[in-house]
Length: 330
Image (cartoon, rainbow, N blue to C red; front, side, top):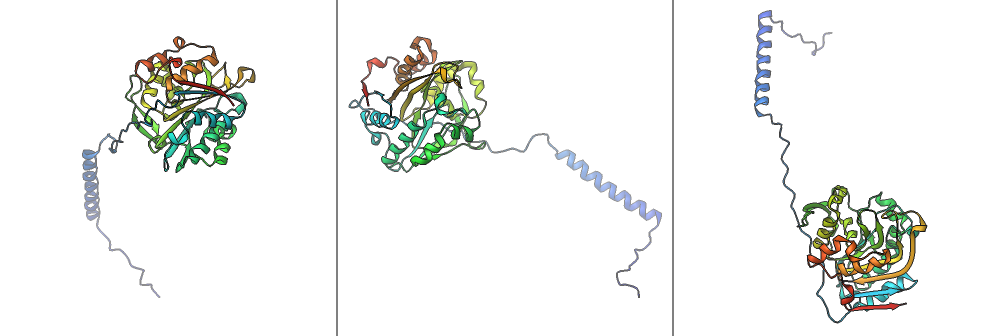
């Protein structure tokens, strides 16, 4: 029995076939012509990203407290607490409800003994002090040169932050914001968005030798806020560091000189390059903190061009001895 689906198409003549083919080709040609007319080699336009600037994280200056505090000792927690208490207490710098960002040096896949990264005990102590001052959140971040997860793990900083109640925050590839640094060498540059979300910024550098800039301490530690091809900044390393110090004004700087990498920085690796100095330095003057740290590397202010450039821009004073300085042992 024949199926109702067994239908035969009506036969067409050769002439009808040619006419239909010609019509189809004509439509295709027309569509192709219009496609050619409207084709553009220009990429699809995207909305321009908003360019932002850094907020000023500093607090109001005070003549009551020392401008520079130097503490010597063996216990990182005690040293940090003594330094912060002497300079006015963490409540001077952190208000209840603040989101506080800590910026240690966590650039390298190294162990604490190698002195390539900030000592984890110092980071943990600052986290605890911020939380005691009723900060809403305490974030710890860096944009490492080596793999970020390995740097935070091997340096001991990741675990120290977790145990002290802070949170490690790392910027993903898309978490960088075009930021106008308003500098001479540094113009618009991708900056970790975390910096634009924080209310306060505490700078936690370590004292180290650097093969290009001779030293990396308070000012150069701020490089860890930047994304992009940072090696390009080495073409004018001194101008770039001064620009960065002018653009990012931390609430407080607490510098780690417990272990000092005196040679083969900034990565180090050999314990023979490390000297034990058991010192922390706290201050609100970024240039003064930097200048004080030079003693650990047998350097002078005139050896470091970016310190002079920063001073000329009014960022701080290189003559730290002219400031109110407090020094103690704990």
